[in-house]
Length: 71
Image 1 (tube, one colour):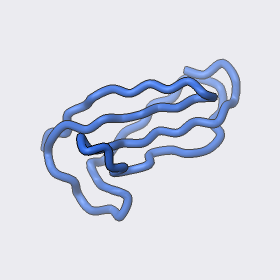
Image 2 (tube, rainbow, N blue to C red; image 1 turned 90 degrees about the vertical axis):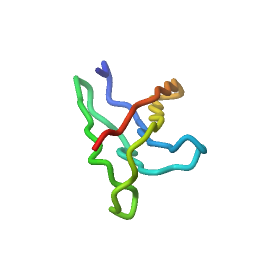
Image 3 (cartoon, rainbow, N blue to C red; image 1 turned 180 degrees about the vertical axis):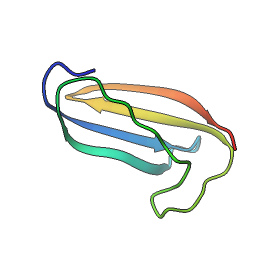
Image 4 (tube, helix red, strand yellow; image 1 turned 90 degrees about the horizontal axis):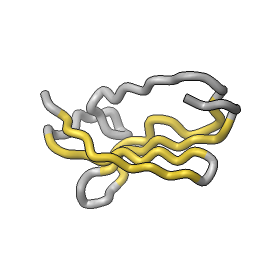
């Protein structure tokens, strides 16, 4: 949820720290939002089941969390 329109980045990484997919990069409007990853990499190829890390950057604030992709 954003109170103001701000630039954001939402990137998914594998456990080796390599970028797998950029889900969003750019300005985002205020309000509540949801993102969903389809389990594909930047080239559209399916990635393997496993643990990944998402990194959300909003106006200098950064948060990273682990997530598990199950197929």
